[in-house]
Picture: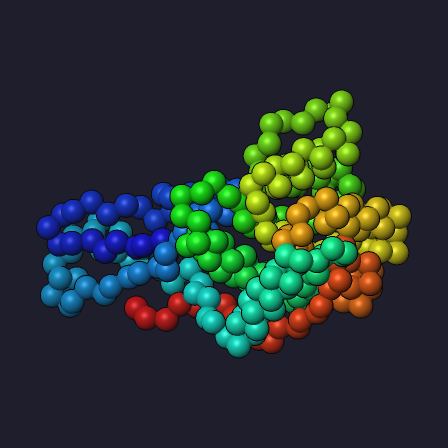
Length: 266
């Protein structure tokens, strides 16, 4: 998002927040996230700032606050390491005939796991767009595990991301999964990112069913696909138990301090 600064000659300044962004758990929101430019703001010289009317100065201040409210992602060593591991696992999956390899990003609260996961997907999607310009591929799918989820709820999360037509009660879970997998195959999806898998409690029957259907998704996608996941620490879903029950042969990575910091500058 580019934040435009007002000019003293009375040029209209768009109100902050006018551009609404869809959530990244929807295809359009995901594309907006990938294409989004870093926020930009230039301070006006003192003379120009003094010449602003009260209305223009309020708009200028709001634009400045909007700039500071958008966190900038710092390319820390952890972000680079997870991006490298994800890239490597995706390449290894191209010739994998067994279980697809996956990646678990584990760590304490507010250490930047979701940020790292999204950056992994963003870098991969930009790489695919550069290699196949103008294609209608969906190289990355990003969803969050549904709370108190069931296999059907999980399948519906995939369907919502892809924008599939409304699915009625007459469609069973396998019907929904089959439709989702068909779209993922046709759009040549490479990465499936499942966030918040701490909601999958493997000590319960529902959690086991949800894990089994993640494995089902993995087995019905092309060999190139992989399923990185990002759990938080949870008694029912530790990194070890998640790796043993994961839909892929999972490796684990633990982030350090959060890579998201308030934007500097003005």
